[in-house]
Length: 166
Image 1 (cartoon, rainbow, N blue to C red):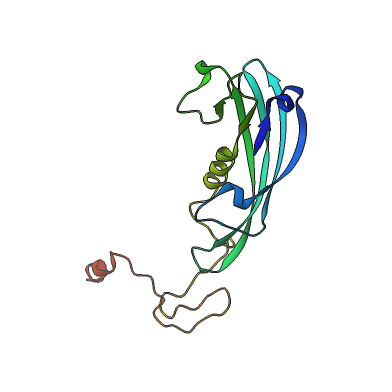
Image 2 (cartoon, rainbow, N blue to C red; image 1 turned 45 degrees about the vertical axis):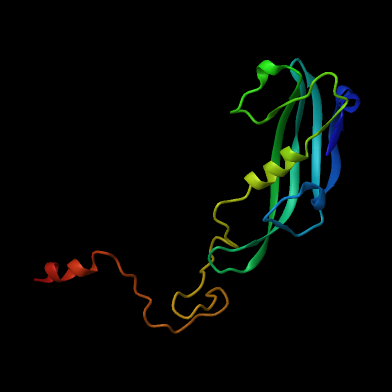
């Protein structure tokens, strides 16, 4: 996504853009729609340009419990500062990007791609109440129940039970 200095200098409020998924080159993610909706606002400040807004995308994910594919709508907040001041840059703060005065435009595609990847949850679940798969027969317990007999939970202390009963 290209941003021009002239447009940033005037500032803008809630500018809507559709970003094609193909332009982001996001590995290992499947999207439910061909575009990401991006809404940005820009305000000029002492240190540079402050961009705020959000990204809305629809990811296709597999549930870690039942393995079914589901759609996960994500709203990702964006905060970004474009500055020509080197003293504001640091390795810890990736929300500040160098934008020298001689540059007329800047590409923030890499920032958008990173924001999408970092917003993914570590554990993906189709719903909070997901029952998962039966560990014996493999049936999806959200769809049907099974008659497997050994559903008992075993603990490492089961072998010590005989000591208590004596």
